[in-house]
Length: 50
Image (cartoon, rainbow, N blue to C red):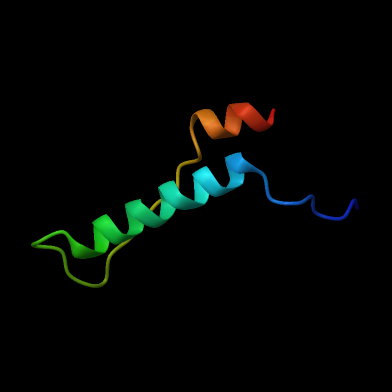
């Protein structure tokens, strides 16, 4: 198996997107734990890596 490559700009975009989604989900009024958060992919970022 090849070693992981260095993070790219696209990696940071995907991370920031996920971070904002998690913070939004956890701070939305009316939500309570337990709470399921589904990561359904990075959208256009996933296509960028292909």
